[in-house]
Image 1 (cartoon, rainbow over the protein chains, first blue to last red):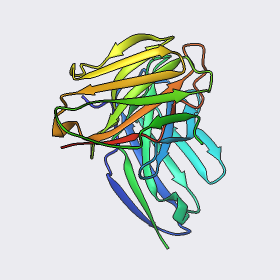
Image 2: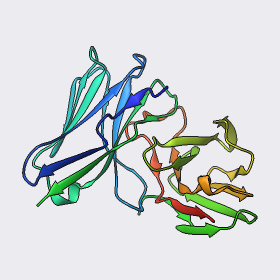
Image 3: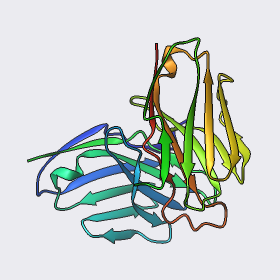
Length: 111
Length: 116
């Protein structure tokens, strides 16, 4: 039973446009959400996070939105750049429990 | 430099071989993790160590044997693996329960394992 789902395995976006990556979760106890970015042959690196007490967190070109009623979060990247091409993992956590990861979305930025 | 170093980066082994993966962190973290990443699957948590003690084993086959001699080092000993065990094996670390976990885990670059 997958508690964190990324239903789009891949996404292609034109350079300069907005990239929107989506993530859904089933466990309403999750209180912290994170996005990781992964390049080929490298480990995931932390990108941005959001606590369940917030509905938006912004860091430069990256913004994460949380809709608790819909159990949905999204990552917005604007403007998209070629270096953003990577696999993006959504992760969620309850309290001090381990992170639960989604399957990832491969983002390709088209020059 | 991620702060978590994994060696080797690539490993090809036969089904009868014995090999070990190594992970090292000097971030002062107290928790370490082994993850497996296979194609089109979520990151699969294998083992968790907190303060050198194993606190979680996610029903991992006994052909994978972890070892954590101290909070900075983590090993994964491999023996009699199967071709389906071929995957990217990732090590991660984090602060323990006192950590606000604002940044989650710090991952290593992984070991790409191929079992032939």
